[in-house]
View: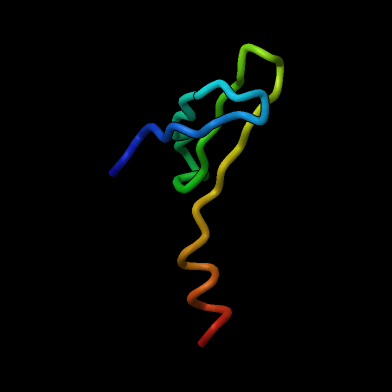
Length: 52
């Protein structure tokens, strides 16, 4: 399982989000040097249930 994800912040910097873990097995969190805080949640399973 992937534990880190890289995204581009709105300010243009690339930041690495790390897996939160625990009950949040599909959530990644990180902070940019510009002060923005990012949370990314993978929702494939939720969408699959919705579309059934």
